[in-house]
Image 1 (cartoon, rainbow, N blue to C red):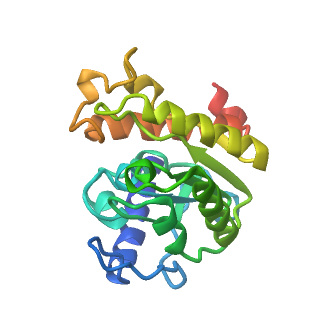
Image 2: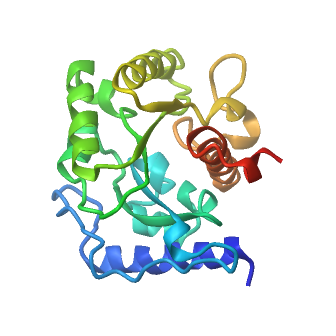
Length: 238
């Protein structure tokens, strides 16, 4: 079985465990979900288990694919992490909830052991909720402290057609903060954004979220960045 297919199957299996453990959308605050006891993702034929890179994702609706929660997004093939995993990257857990602010996300950061790379998409809903950037910074640090990853990647937020000036402002702050903290910063939405800082028509869904094609492309961009810039994987340079 191809490595990517095996990896996606492992993502779905772990997502099912997380969903049964109580990750739900809606107003009641979900209980942080640990991945302890969850089945370990399968290694591919070319990568020994000890050489797998354990990925954790944190985010809001654009992490889930705007279908509720991270497990639901993975199950429906809408979560971008579906297109990040594959030899040697493996899904180790995470959290995501539609509409989550950075504070809500930080409060629900799960305990995940041995995190190699944390992918954190944070701040999309903060301006609408009136959350200041100083709180965003605090929430990022709280999330990273709980996950304790070897490497942290702060992902830029996507276009917002109704307020095209907002994402560039938020992303500029995220990039500056990430640099100051020694984190990585990456904007995976560049190829989905037009010159007016809005969604390109082929990736447009509702002005805030993209379609499955967009999430597939975005996930592939994240995968490439992690392998080439974070892991400096020679095989990914080819």
